[in-house]
Image (cartoon, rainbow, N blue to C red):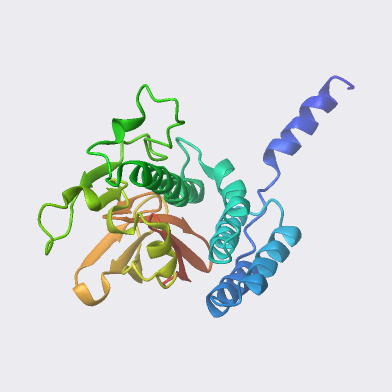
Length: 261
């Protein structure tokens, strides 16, 4: 009899139901985040309160990223980075996949600030920006990050001024391949939260087996996209579908919406 008990206990642990996400509590936190886009301390407190109440909730990864965004808006870059670094998880799925991409994106933007500062040091010395980013090769100066958080080299080129020919080395373009025009930290922080995510859920599409799909509409551009959780349409990733809400994300923001019926 005593030999059977451990096995029964193990089965009980394995069979124990996984706690559902606190979607109602999360929705309240999400609405606070949207309403407090200029009240960053209040939004940070709301994110902290949700995590304290629901420490193992799968949606905590989203509230941590909302908190990181508000910290960046407050100029607390190091505190934001400390939250984001552990979220970078190669091979992650669902919510953690979206969180990993968003974390990489904001960390890339912070790294880009370091590259900008290093380029400015060279400019002060040479009164010109370098032709290529290999300028630190063989130098005693410590090189800034020369790849983004996806391991891709920066897209860097001298562009000069269109109305001042002959001054090509006085201006440059520096982008992460995946981020393009929103590679710059300040530019990304100026965006209204979620404004680049145009997909809107319209209705569920039942399947013969497995979870339903969601039919999204593309906003003003028109058209439709039918997606399953874990798939991407252009730059938007469908990260989560629960009982009441769905969550999608691009490489900058989350968008949380009521689940369609």
